[in-house]
Length: 92
Length: 392
Image 1: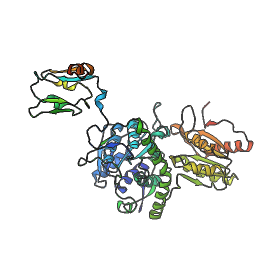
Image 2 (image 1 turned 30 degrees about the vertical axis):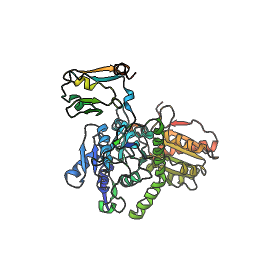
Image 3 (image 1 turned 60 degrees about the horizontal axis):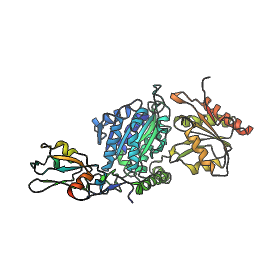
């Protein structure tokens, strides 16, 4: 073991922190204008972009802070309870 | 080496040049102020060539040192009393991050009541942060102990920060001679610091201070404990090396004077411990078999040395210039704890006094020692704890 804790930058260095989440960001892609504001503000860098700027949240690591929903100029990111999101997508 | 005449604070500022310190971050507080003040002047005049960071508080001072040390720079700061207390979070952080920062804490009473003179409560209250703690008794000892402390702190077996305590005003503002070493001379003793583990480097990024779950946290704490305990053995090597190179030796973790045939040993920290030598000499002239054990290091606590002394003496007169409120003299209690698991049972009398800078003269020290002799001769311990010179 090292004498003090440190880690190299790797995905999930401290586990699947998405398990801490209560509310999940859900993007209304019909409204989203691909401005990338959410991607810029995400403190966990868990939003990835398609070539056209379409944002995707990595729910394995998103902590559900809701900053993306707050900064979205189109107000098209909704924070919904994890169970509710999973019901909508048919995961449960 | 050349002899200079300066106050302890001015000498501490010179030790920063001698040890080639690369970053100093400090905030002024009486009586520490003239340490950073001198470093700033030496910086302006080109003698101190490292960075001097003017910060807005002691909390920032210690964290600037943490940042500097994390990059592999040799870092130093100086403070007193409330300033040291404001650093608290950073003191724990520096120790757990295993950063070999060195602090000169100039002991000052904690407020209220407002008092700028010496009490050891400020540093005693930081006893359990992991920092190695020295208490010094002269300007020369302070200057050289700071240089030694970098070697001790940076040793891979230790890698813990060091706090060197010097009594406010009695040492900090009192001129005395000391032997100054040029940085070129110190180079033979102290090589540049090279972090043996993680380092903050933009070319090779790492996250430090990240989450550690219950599975591992305890192990990091155990390694801190081991590092601090290793300081006793490593300091022995450091002192041997230093003595060989510069002819300076200050007596190890406990500097004993006339202890060999002593029946009672007086223990204390800081400037009182130097004053006590005169009291010992006078009592020896009066026929008392008494010795002086100047406790230079309280963390790690020199348990073996105390046990060795305790196996030979009939009593300890242990003097603390500070209090653990509700349980008396911190060093006296450590001496008692050290002796418990041995078969020897010397009387261990605890005395508290000299608080708020109240003068502890040779007469006062003799009174304390004679009180212990009385207990030893009568076989009655009397009070476990005595506040010396307490008003009715």
